[in-house]
Image (cartoon, rainbow over all chains, first blue to last red; front, side):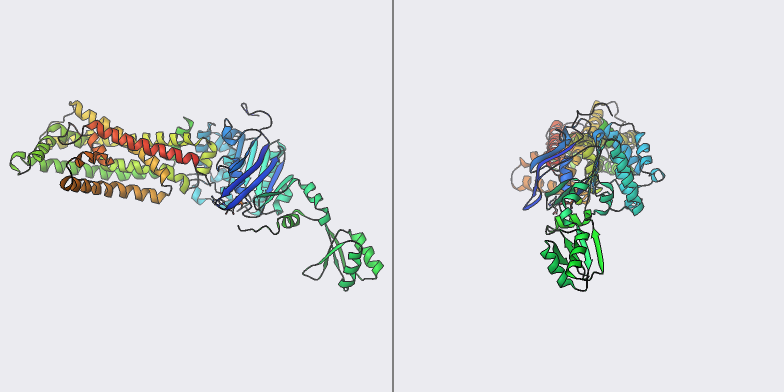
Length: 310
Length: 276
Ligand SMILES: Nc1ncnc2c1ncn2[C@@H]1O[C@H](COP(=O)(O)OP(=O)(O)O)[C@@H](O)[C@H]1O
Ligand SMILES: [Mg+2]
């Protein structure tokens, strides 16, 4: 650990009653959650949910209308050497188009009071050494994201915050980032990653904080959030007699909806029970499939009805 | 201090400063030629016989004194030099928004007034570099020009050195005005255009307005002309007290006033504004 770190607890991200009003729009609405060290936490929500605004308030860039956000009991501005404690890669973070990647990092080192030699180390960490002396305007989107991560790692921070880091990365790059973040979390760091796409979060996050329309929908370990949706786990069944099967299953206490492809989706019953009910009712089955709810589905269900564009 | 060094590194690692430096050289040469030409023409006029009013004749006589010709020449390049320095000061700020680096900058130093202070110091240093370069060039070239005008080099006269020193102050103060203006007008193009146009058109427009006011409304309006920032900086570098003009220190005070107001306003605004 780097000397001069604030005391215990400051590795935990604490958001309490956080609110941001933009004119008539409440971009973030009384949001409260905590993020623990040693884990990767996914900060999930559809576009316009208020993720970026929340992260900017946490980092002291945007002033909250109400509530507070910080690290333990300290706000970002109250940290002695913020870069040595928190690293951040925000959506709109960028570099001067005419400056080389290496010089961009050297400027940050200078400002943070870190030896300039650190620039080469973080370039190496993100695999950008070959492009170190090229100008930023020639960088691909993926290289820009890597440079952003390098900049965030300059102070070897205990807390790392990333806003939609997967944007612009190819599958290979996403996989690289996933491994990097998991490794950093395994070292005991706090990792908060926002995303509106869940596919890659599902493979990476230990915890999730789900928001929609500026409000907290659910927070907890990925498994718990999925578990809480167990009632939402579904059985997919196909039959030439959908009406009879629906009647029988409804009588048995299950919920039935028809899927666009003509199959039925059954909730509140496991595959065995569906099969038995069909057998007892003398209904012929062509397909019977238990589907574990995945995060994507849970997410869509949880945030359904919350307008995407506000 | 780290922040000042970072700001200087930011300036050094982009091309803007030397592009401006290259623009500065021909402008400086032009200024020397212009000042030379003006001195040549007015030196050839005999105030007593030119049909000027008594006041104007007196002004001309003083302006033709060796020391005043010398101070004007030794500070050649001020008018456009401080314009470039002001623009650089503004660009130091607007760059952060244009290239979306403000986020990173304020993450490194969340206490925003420190960032602005560092930018002010870096801009002042840059202004002083421009001053030093034009001054060295002037010290090399102007003695020959003065010789051609039948004056001695005048470098023994403390008034010349005072003018050169106050010229440094003018460069520094205009740099501050630039940084403040950059905060007020965040757009790169907007700030550059507004400042250039206001500087050039504003200077001549204001002279015209004050001339008309003085002629047709009241004489005392001419005393207010020093409130025009460019007039203030020209006044600062005059060799002797010019008749009909306020004393030099008034020019300095006016310019310091503009620098303090823009610098202060800029810092206040940056402290409050959301960075997104
Ligand atoms: N500076 C701003 N002024 C006005 N509205 C804003 C501003 N920033 C964000 N918003 C609005 O706040 C809402 C949340 O935006 P944002 O935090 O960027 O969402 P997300 O990052 O989850 O996509 C959006 O509806 C957006 O239009
Ligand atoms: Mg966003």
